[in-house]
Image 1 (tube, rainbow, N blue to C red):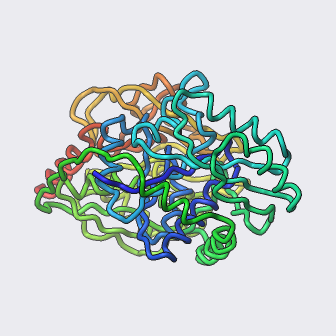
Image 2 (image 1 turned 180 degrees about the vertical axis):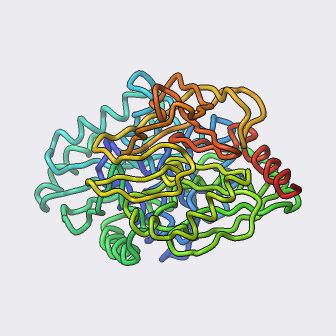
Length: 451
């Protein structure tokens, strides 16, 4: 199957991958191409930028969460545009651990057999930029690197020195981007600010993309992408007849969802209806609820004031409606969220309190589901990830945990997955198609609809 594609990778984090990827998408769309963006790794924030500039949903590609087969299947099935653009994560060879290439951008590029353009920060180097590039080319037997973009060029002289040093390596220079603080996207926590935080951010992205795109050789990018290796065809997944409705929280507080997870629920027969725990006074009529991650602490006051929404969700939970919540959703279901000595009252389904900290917890996770839950019938292994700046305190001794973690911090003592009634909430994020989570969750929603 011919899928024109390209990976935009970075030598390190913070070299401008997202700004440059957005700029490439912008430029290609101006030339009449439709673009499907992808993001390597367990990331919810960068995809919001790519989605904003492309006007398309973004799919994550993570070998740890998805496995090789599911990753390739997702990439092929969702590459329905003229060109697919994959934005990398961290440094090009940075994987699951410091000892392995597994789950790195290079690993994903190898699975998808994609050509790679490497972004280098040239701000504090000149001739040595050639040694850096040569190291990336030689570090792995097949680097897949076919071009390089030099970011943060200080002057015409600086550009000449860098280009002159790279001549002997004979790797095409796809672009040289001048150093300009106005071309930097704002940062929040580990990643970039979600586009849902500010309506004006889309305009900012477009302005940045317009400037950067003028420094890139778009025709060469098109040539690289359209000469990609042919990938195997895959069969289209079957969609079951719609049977139930799942209400999904989606607003400025809750917007961390893998697109594949939502589509797997639809595939199993769920109709998805979105609602806002901030603005809406009632939840859509539904047979199950999914509350994803996000930044509920940012709008804690607005969430706390929406008493009718909190009451409805708690009543439904006590009525045993199936609820699945991750990270921000877990926080929302506790008694309160405390940030900067201010406490906001939340739903209170779980006998625990959330406190924001300055310590970041970022892990891939691995363990076992030890009891029956809304997404599982029997014990089995799980692999996911966690990313949060909060911790649960005053957790009741009667609290039930259903995840035992080998890797990852979880909620408490490597325990995660709190259960109350028919509600499962965890700091960990799961990829539904790595098991039959979606099928079981939908089946539990069907059972509830018949009660």
